Image (cartoon, rainbow, N blue to C red; front, side, top):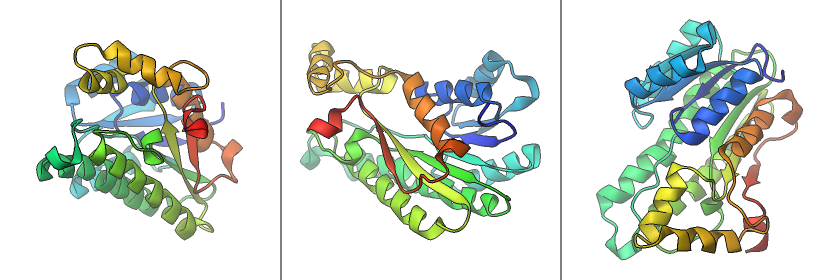
Length: 257
């Protein structure tokens, strides 16, 4: 159990990747603080996981600094430490050309995907500096962090920014015992990607799905559990020489485009 005794925070915990990662972390022996906006969904997830004292939740908005500070403080109060921060919460925004995006639409994505991630990094560092031993911050990036496609301007810009935060954090934290990396999924068979396919072609989303598959050497979409496995590796002592990396989970898509 590679995360035995570790305390992990997962933001975006009620999303598909968040849920799969929570299950994986618990299987690996971690205690987990689940964070999200919907208290009802968080309560239901805690009950579903049924891990008694190993799971707690915090309802709040990661784009709000006071909420992120409270999330970390609550975790420290409940579990005494923070070893892993999985900054996973994100927003996909609207799919339409750059010239048609509004300022509010652009800001709504950046507030969650960039400012929210930065706040999670900031307050995780403050808590992790007290640890003796290895700590790990993992950020959810995307294939969109190194590629582009029509209609995804705010989301693509946000994921490029996230990768920059990871590289900056790695330089600043190199001798601190705190590692920081990005897990970058490609097309994953979950709500977010299926909504994106529907936005790109409302009449027949299956065409979008097939087009993505043709650009993936493994010829399939990924699974939430496959992303969770990558995140668990980056959180563990098996990745102690890994920092500043953008780790793809995309079936080879970005390697061949």
